[in-house]
Length: 184
Image (tube, rainbow, N blue to C red; front, side, top):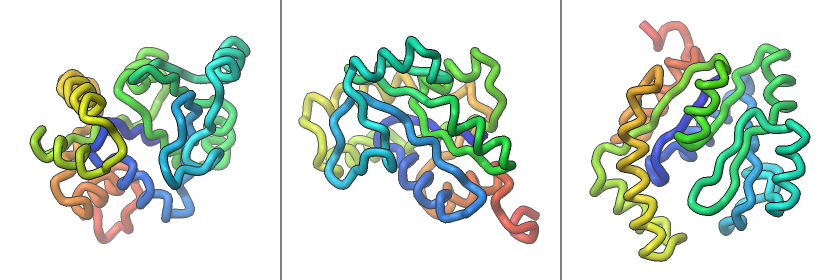
């Protein structure tokens, strides 16, 4: 299992989309109670649930982990992970820092990678450039990013996303997804 997390706007979704071009990689579709963003598809980007549906599934033990982030619930479903790992594939989990910490505390084995922004000014520009959040939401995300950045020491690896191709290749190398000649 390859666990990718980092602050909002650090580029983890871009890296994960690129990793999914490899047929050996299976994406963990997280469940969430937040509203879909423009272009997101239920069942592909997230499994969008009502708070009631989410809580019911949690009560039935269907999540490996779940947490509240920015006022919404997010969780990783157990069944798809078990299926992918049994088939010998890389199970890619894009998850917030709180969820990754929870997975580690539960002893879930994997390669834990923290994607870091080159600096917080770049992170601010990325969040503003998205055009998806109100200014107060961006400020809340930046405050949280500082806290999340402190958690990077708990990860197996920290990858600074200064140049996307370089960061992507570093993650591919950590996951064993580069051809042998590129890992030397």
